[in-house]
Amino acid sequence: MIVVTLATIAINGLATGLPLNGQSTGEISDRFPSLFTPAGYVFSIWGVIYLGLLAYMVFQALPSQRTNPRMRSIGWLYVASGVANSVWIFLWHYNQFAWSLVVMLVLLASLVGIYLRLSPFTRGVGAAERWTTHIPFSIYLGWITVATVANTATVLLDWNWSGGPLSPALWAILMIAVATVLGLIFALREVNPAYVLVLVWAFAGIAVKQSATPAVAWTAIGAAVLLVVAVVAGLLRNRRSVRSQPLANN
Image (cartoon, rainbow, N blue to C red; front, top):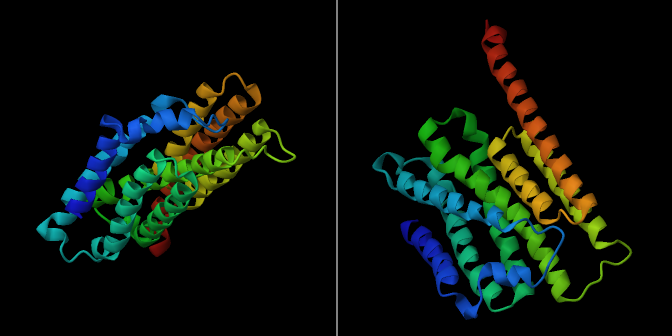
């Protein structure tokens, strides 16, 4: 896990520092302007993600975690996510956008697998495991959900797809709507603020970046507000449920 984590972070750092193939990740994205693309500052979330992965790397290596079944159950999926992340960087920087989407889907699938293995135990684990494992992977999954949509848009633009019967603005609104539905599920059923707030962060960035297209910007703002309300509602409902359990057991 240590090697995978450090290699993933190092490759991403080199991609930006060199940059790979003479172009940064952001410069490539700017070549394919999509109305779903958020403002540049939104991508700073990668710093949060990598800090979370470092925290996980340290936590899972502790002697006390050697027999933790949750750490063991996600090991191979974490390796798959690290490999996919690194391979995606090379494919993206060398303009292999269709293949980059395939690898992005592998990354998304591996993170979904990690989430499914961790989520049933989130309420029962200690604060250390929650903050070093459960929350970081929820943030990571939230961002890759957004990134997968953006990557798909890039591939379609690279193929010169015009959008069919729908305008670019309508496609962007549709993508925001789909992401919002996912956010509502994570807010109300999963009660996972970390995942949902990543979507809020992305939607706020879309509103800023796409301010010249009011329909998209206001849809993004509305979606962000709706998700914040859903997060609060989910937390309040969960709190009431937890409080009522001891009474029900008496």
